[in-house]
Amino acid sequence: MRPYLLAPILLTLLACQQPPVDTARLIELARKGDAAATVSLVQRLGQDGAGDSDAAYKALIGLGPKMVPLLLDGLETLEGDFLEYRIAALGSLRAEAALEALSRILSRSDGKRRYVAAWALGEIGGEKVVPALVSALSDTNSQVRRSATRALIKLNRTASPALIEALQRTGGEAQAAAVRALGDIQEPGALEPLLRIIQGENREEVLLALGKLKDSRAESALIAGLTDADWRNRLSATMALGPTGGEASVPHLQQRLEDDIIQIREWAARSLQIITGKPQRFVNAKGQVVAPYSVYH
Image (cartoon, rainbow, N blue to C red):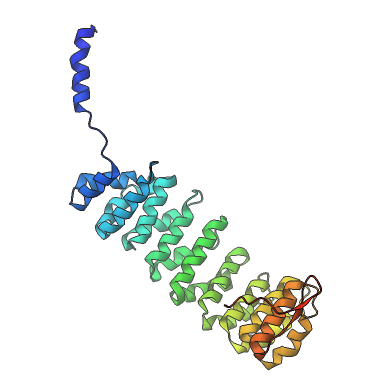
């Protein structure tokens, strides 16, 4: 093509090109109800830029629940930051309409941002999110398990029946996560189920959880844990008896002041102090007799 024929074509193309609208301008237009600007904001979630994603995210949250359909559109085809920002926005908006999509994302066998879906389900809350989160306790990804556990703890006693049921049918990391969640929730109904598995593979976690329940009926089981061959179990029992134990625990905790493990000696002094209301001391790593550091202030 001859050069003089190219010129009009180039001019036409240049005239059709529009300069990119900056994020601040898009936010302004979206707040005024501009649908195209709102779509553009959603598309900027996860894009590299000088705070563009964060600014768009905050603006979309501010626009409220009417943003949910746009955020859900194509959600399950996204990856990386694009997926994470959308999921986070849906969680922050507590979008119940996103439950099924988020549950599917959480249950994927791959994907690096699935833990965000667990967080979002916890933010949305309600009984409907519990099955997906309890199922995620068996996930092979530790980050997903931790996020699901935190979400279940946030749901509090709404999650308790499913967590108690999980104690019976799971083992390993899944059971340990359920134990931790029930302890942090301080679920009274978990006492007997926890006692039933106290001799199992998650004994350390069960002993700690029993302490969080603060139920004196667990005292004898915790006293028995003070003499475990595994020092980690002795430590858990020593820690748990502070908020749970009574006078019957005192002589047994006094024996732990002579334990080979420094942390156990310190926690024995700390638990004795809680039970008796009197200052206690233990021998530290330097052989000095000192008061335990307060972890409760």
